[in-house]
Image 1 (tube, rainbow, N blue to C red):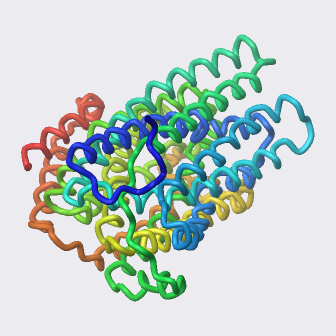
Image 2 (tube, rainbow, N blue to C red):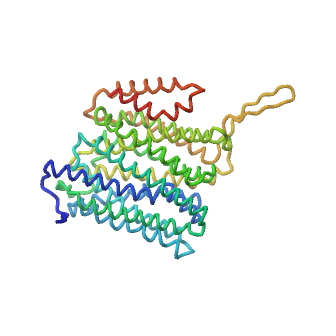
Image 3 (cartoon, rainbow, N blue to C red):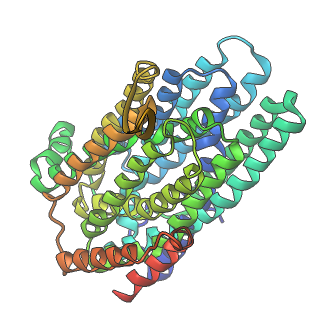
Length: 490
């Protein structure tokens, strides 16, 4: 017998454990949807349709800008008092949008990209409503002391599936481009169609998941939405999240464009780098999840956020001013460090919001935070896309000259062109976000300062052991050696 949308008054331990299994399976299906219809595949599809830098920036901004619709989630839930019904219905209609996205380029020649962008807006707007309701649902379903461990496990198995699907899709698309170039649009149609089917499977799994009865929301919606700003600690979290998301999204959405256009790598190379980063993320998720539960999410952010900023800054050294012998090894290092850092930042950022939001008012707190984050994170790639052409013919170089007699030798020590400016600006804005992180207080933690000092000291010791002779070999081994070092501190 199929379940209903009626919330459960209470859940037994067995029912709760079964519910967590449905949430894990939903994570796999949702990851398949995201992998096949987003990221490098969506950017490559847009480039195939003739997208400009500004349009690519707009496409990158849509998922975050659309999250402003999470505020409407509060209003809807105040009326229907049923998070499962809202989540399932919004997810169903939102994910249907990928079917016309897949098929329209096969039928129309004019204004296809504009229609695709409009459909993406509809998909992500409905997805934002669903996500806000889903977050509040999970806040009541998953015990607070298991948030870090559960979501780290969910992310790990989901991203493992994402790695497999990414490689298979990348090889298939590159094969079609080389052997059957006239069938490129058809190949993307199959890809997005498969993603839509996975999205429908996710909707079914959500339908099978029970919902605890939610507490009634206040009738005054404006008073409800003011609460997060009246909560000093949560307000500090909002400021940190907003500045961090703007800083990161000023550069991150254009990494794929940079690899495809500036460095002229194939899609298989781009996906291979993505997979390398995801493998490092998967490898470290469980570790950061344990530390988040044992110590604090803030401690994890205090380590992973600077590491991610450093990986962004390293992008500026991939060209001097063109690709050189160390470009490929440096890209490997960048994606290793970025993967390690992403594991901690993505997990801790979501967990700390759930942890600091009061249980009864979680939907309002999370929706307001998502709205502010989306406004900043969505603005960043739009700004990046608009200013990309401005920086196109701009260059800032630092050269070292050596003259011996009449012979002049010039060493190009540093060169900034177009996207390099965004990488540096993103790094500097990220440093300010780290300053805001210090104002957040996370209760129920222990030895946060000691944990930070120990892990930083051990990482510095490992980095100092890298020699110029065996550096590359050690860098490849870095994720495993760091995991061993950090695990010993448990």
